[in-house]
Length: 401
Ligand SMILES: *Cc1c(COP(=O)(O)O)cnc(C)c1O
Image (cartoon, rainbow, N blue to C red):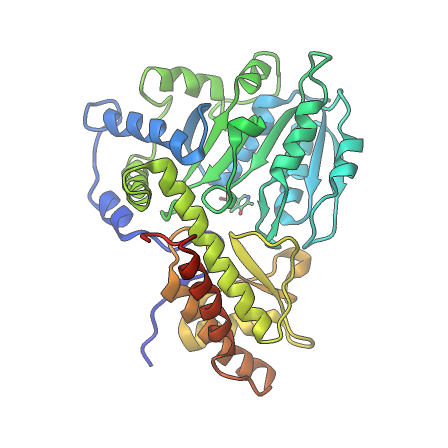
């Protein structure tokens, strides 16, 4: 049968056709009126997308570049920082903070789990300069309680005038999770273009609080390209410090237009609709997997992706390979120590009902072939249908209803 190549990976994610065409023929010099209005509009609209009034900066790098920028701009060598880690991306925070000479305290929980707020509370003393965490840990599909963590951080250190900063890697969290950046007091939140924005890799962005800007005046870690104060100064004049990824800005403009359309002309509403869409795709997928007797790997599960534990005795690599060979569908294996033990299906960005039902129907065949077990065809699809029908009845979580 004809097969279409489709990505079900938690980044890169499927591309929005309008974003692809917008960038395909885009040429403009970045210091001219051919580009500057687009740059300025995108920076302004990114605030609505992020749900924040804080300054937003967009840089040419993968997500990790701006994760590094948060460490190099907000810390000095020897600073005590707390890293909350529950997977590969949490471990990246540890690596980055150590690379910049921080005195790193690590609160680690097993892959697939999330943190106890009480344990976090015990770790955050006023001498902790910054706390680093993921909104969703893409390696395991677990959701972390950013609101709960923010409450603890904001309650600590303020009185001594030595505010602890909260830095959130929301690279898979933005556009899949309802986040109140300003209301909760998140100081530095990070996103990437190849996730919920439905466009290629190459841009990373952040929203920076006043508290974080103030910190940057005192920190001494080395930085140059990622000197955010320089970037902010240029942005205030309506341009970027260095050559921006102009064609990716064209794609980003189109993606923001699409998201605004999801909100019937209101970008903030469109962002909510995009989050609800991911939530519904994820709920359908969880129900489908359970109906096939599979177990979910993480708790609580994020809407960004669903990590499914491989059936006993089956290397998840076999499942990933079968998806590819039968359907040309790309799902993700486990990362690091979880390789072979789980597979991941993403719901970030440009996924709809038909994608979700399709991947679940495919999963039924993949499971039958890799396990040799009898699979009741339609079981996963039926369970997903029930979830969808309920959402339809509730008129919630539905784009365009
Ligand atoms: C994708 C992702 C990143 C960024 O990875 P890059 O390859 O540098 O873009 C960071 N954190 C999380 C949680 C991610 O999902």
